Image 1 (cartoon, helix red, strand yellow):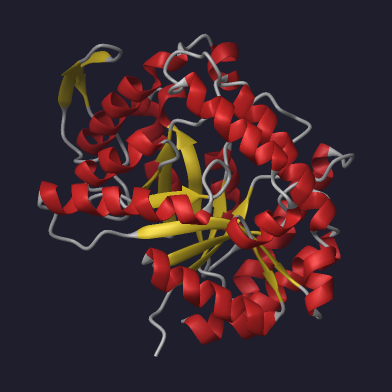
Image 2 (cartoon, rainbow, N blue to C red):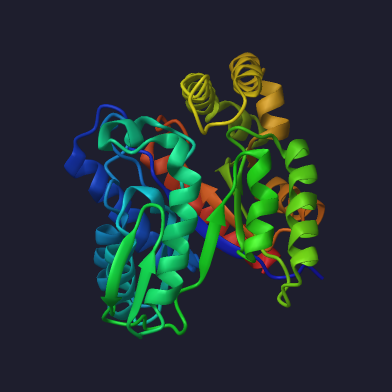
Length: 352
C-alpha cells in the first residue's frame, strides 16, 4: 500500500504577454481550483524586480488574501527570502497571516540562488547565508511571545516583544529550500524539513544530496523523522504522445532561461564555485528533451504519473510533491487546469 504524500501546488510564473492583473487573476483561479479539488496547500514563490516572469513579489500579502477566500486549503511560501527582510517584521506578518488563516499557513524559507534582488536592494549576496541564520534565530525567539534582545552581526535590538504570537504554536511549520550541495547538510543540522527542486540538480544528483541531509539530521540527534518535499514540473496528457509533445516548447524555454540564470552566478561572492556554475549552466543549456523528460520533469497520462511519482517517492524517500503546472509560462491555462484536475481526481487518490 502506498504511503500518504502531501500534494501542493507551486505558483510563481506569470504567462508571457499577459497583464499583471490577469496574472493575479489566474493565480486566484488556481487557488480556487486547489481548494475545490482537494490539493493540500498552495505554495507561493517570491520573485523581485522581474515583471516579465512573476508578479509575486509580496507573497505574504497574497497568502493572506488567498486565505480569506478559502476555508480548507493551506497556503505557504516557497520560499520567503529571509536575508532581504527585517526578521521582526517577518515575525509579525507571518503570525498575522497565521491568525487570518486560522492556522492554515506553512512558512517556507530560503535565501534564493539568484543575486539580482540582492543587487537592487543593496544587500551583499555573500552575506546571505549569515543573514539567513541570524534571521531564523530571531524568528524563533520572537514567536515565543516574550521580550528579548539580540546583538548580532546584522541585527541589533533591545527589549522587543512581537505581537501577535502565531496561531499555531510554537509557530507555523517551517521548511527550508536547499539547492547548493553545501546547503543540504546544513539544513539537516538545523533540523528543518526540506524543499528540493530539479532546476540546477537532476533527479540522480538529488539522491546523494538527500543522503547528506539525512545523515546530518541523524548525527544532530533530531528526534522527528526528516521530511523532504520535491518541487517538480508535472504535466498530464490524455495520451502519451500529447503528454510528451504538448509541454515541450514551454519546458525547453524554461531550462534555456534557467541556464542563463545559472551563468549570472559565475564569479559572484557567496554563490559557490564558479567552475561548478559554469559546468551546470553548460549542461542545462545542452540538455536534450529526452534527458529533460527522464531527469527533470514528470509528464504522462494519469497512469504514467501515478507510476512515476510513486517511483520518486520511494527512491528519494519523499513525503510531499509540489506540482509546478506551467514551468516556462507557455502552457495554455486550459491545459494547466486539466493537469490539476487529472492529478486531483486520479493521481492523488492513488498516492494518498
